[in-house]
Length: 264
Ligand code: SF4
Image (cartoon, rainbow, N blue to C red; front, side):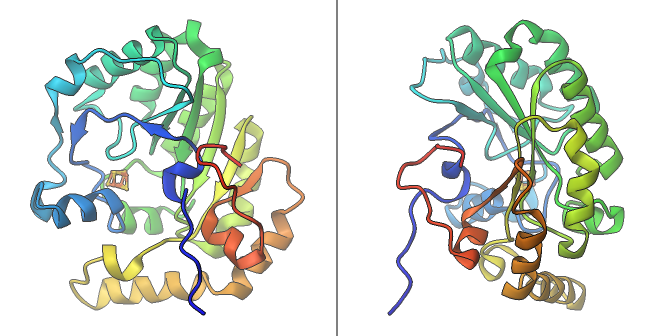
């Protein structure tokens, strides 16, 4: 019998609501789901994705109070080219009374600007920084224009030191064999959670342009074998910070919540 399709996957595991103000993302991650969707729905061509375009009408619009935490952003990142627009949108969401989950492959300049500007809202913000590996070669292959490990860790430390709630998303895991050590390296600066998840939809989202990428996909597929997921689960299941995305819950037999946005 085919496996029942689960609802509430992806960012819906964290929040019911997301807000964005930009099209495209300069990080240009090879596995990007948002890029795949934008190309499939003919919103832009694949080679246009790295050119970030601020959508001024989404910056200018009034923000309402949502009945749950709002993720910002979910289909782009916060970068030097859009930080001014992102600051405006974050300010409007906070002024409307919202609680925010700010998700980023963090650049220290951008994160320190947010922390410094919105310090009075620190009880309303959780930062969630995506850090899929600590190995710079692995990061720069899969996420060619995103910051390196040291800058992401420094950003996490900055948010932690300035009193914000902090979390880490290791989704997708880009180096399964380094995950446990990386969790140990990051947990001293993490107050909320460390989420682990597999790389999903490999065949659908990753366009092969030669042996290099096919080889890298094989490494990911091999790393994500159930026996490796079980090994990581056994090593980290008693760590109170660690949470499992749906892709891992399925392997180890954890029930997925019925409701979206519970962040569990
Ligand atoms: S940071 Fe996110 S939105 Fe940007 S390219 Fe990477 S996966 Fe896509």
